[in-house]
Length: 244
View 1 (tube, rainbow, N blue to C red):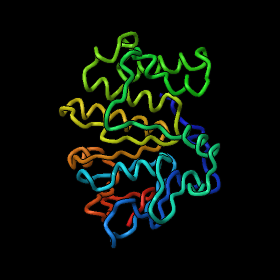
View 2 (view 1 turned 90 degrees about the vertical axis):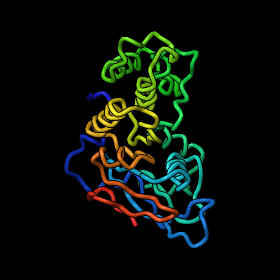
View 3 (view 1 turned 135 degrees about the vertical axis):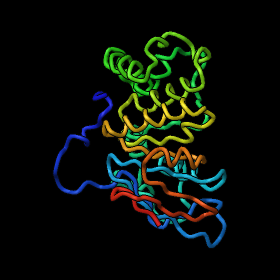
């Protein structure tokens, strides 16, 4: 699916590129005193799974990366920029490089599948003639082509999750943040979502997936950053993901 690949994916061998995400001694708001700080990095095109039980800070970490919150301490770097130094315009520009899949679908029930998928490019002012072919191709690629003109109520839960992912990548983000993308799905539907995320990653988009399901984390085949009561440990970490 070449239409969602980013320019960074085709740069070839050049000077080192800044990580898309870097946490340096980050403490989350509301964490118990004495919890060890979190440090990790993701290179462009990386895939990392953030796994742990409810309440361990997974969504809080995604919120920091999505520029919806600030840490209690430490530094969060995005695309080589210190998030604490960003002005309002900088935040708006960087958010366009980040795709978000929420734990709840947050689909707009009064809009068709096509219009839900096209929401981001439309909101940021792209012309329909520019984004429509890309969105049509994207929905077909995700197995939602025959559903483009129906409302979300006509979709299965698995289809709704795929639509939420389509909406998140329609603007070709550099990184996709997916919060419980397979949550509540049966085995086959969950596997289809994981395969979809893998294909998006192969097309050049970095993926950071949060899940409380250890089986989903293991099935992803990606490095896993385990969160336990304020502590983190990376299992099977590749070069592009390092944590402590």
